Amino acid sequence: MKKLIFVPLLMGLLIFGFTSTSQASGIAVSAAGVRAVALGGAYRALSGDWSGGYWNPAGLTQVRNWNIGGSISFITPQAKVKLYPYQGHRLFGFAYNEATSKPKTFVIPNVGAVKTLSSGLSVGLGVFVPFGLGSTWDLYNPVPGFGNKEDYPKYDNLSDMQVLDFHLSLAYPLTEKLSLGAGFGVLHTSLSMEQTSVTKIASLNPMLAPLAIAPHEHFPAQQKLDVSGLSYAASFGLQFKPSDKFTLGLAARYYTDVTLKGSIVADAYFPFDQGALNTLKQLHAAKAMSDADYAVASTLFSGTKQQIINQDNIEAVMPLPLNLGGGVAIRPTEKLLLTADVDFTQWSVWDKIDIKDSLLVKIHGGVVSKMKTELKENWSDGIRFGVGLEYTLMQTEDKHLVYRMGYYRDPSPIPDSSIGPGIPDITVKNSVNAGFGYTFGKITVHAAYTHIFIPDRDVENWVLEPNGNNENWAGHYKVTDNEVHIGVDYNF
Image 1 (cartoon, rainbow, N blue to C red):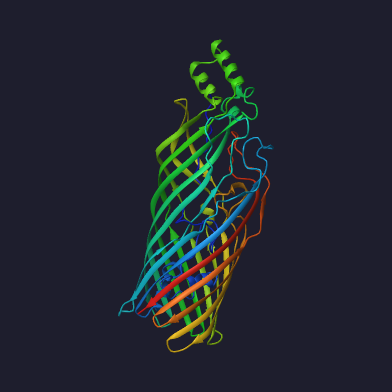
Image 2 (image 1 turned 45 degrees about the vertical axis):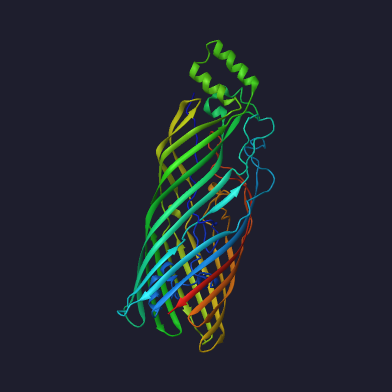
């Protein structure tokens, strides 16, 4: 038998139970602090509370004594895809009607605390969620007549990733107008993913091509990856306030590569074809096939389910993207505040991700291949811009009510060649945000609503490997997203 070319799953990274829609592209999430969300993420020149550890650590110097707070975001995305014919026909089992991701409301928490010391040094501690993705789909079912004796899983394409950043930040005012900040974080990443992969039997051995006739010319494999790892982050920031009406903010976030270690398992569902089995039996009896080749070939048409990969020593190194951004805040009147930000994310680091250890693919107990594999992404760098408005509706000695609006535009970094339902960031996102902040005494309550307008995307061509495994998912994609954000701050 020739080497089995089998590309397993390694598609993404994070989740605390959410998707990659809120305030960012790719797998990035920017939901730290409701005020920042309501202002469209245009917050680098403002960040004067606990969320500054994420947006711009230099802003922590605005805290006079203590600031403790947190936010929680409820994100309800809905993704749909109508897959195009796979290899020109419908006999491989991929969904041909419009499929909808499993409905779910995802929850993202962020918390932090800041203390400004008598020396002027501000110290912040926070737990942030900087990246995330997640989705659950039913996209594959063996076609009638395929003949496997086991039921295929109901949900066959799943992604669930969690990244938490435990971040320490320091900030100091060099002058009355200029503050600098820096931070260090420890990130924990865990990733669990499942995906269907289809292999053509003729790609294993061309001699089997005459026997591999539709719908028995291929077999699907359900792959599951579970990995986790630690990495580190560094943040830097500057805030310059030449007057009470104008503030400039610059910030950067850098992440080290994360080494993910864990396991990968793949179960193959072979077709049942009695005619092919009879022919193989005759060839074996005539000594035209060796015992080993006959054992593997007959398994391919046996209608059984077999575990072909089971390894607990998988290791992969995954980069996380650098982010650079700057913004301004202008107060033209006492009641009105305007903000604007632009930032750059180096998504091109997601070129490809290698699995270091060779995978042992076994059929009928024998090693069919020992191979290296990689995930090809080829993402593009992205530039996002956002604007925000905050208007004071009421202000008394101990009460303060403000209204906020924001907008951001964010492109998708994912090319047609690697797009898929696992990361449903299909195209440019136009987010409209609205919210309020109400202060009474030492407590401020924040709330915001977000709706993201996302045009449909049409990907016409499958990108396939010689064995039939797909590197993308061709089809017509639709995504909608609604979000509610709630937060509380306490100053004392």
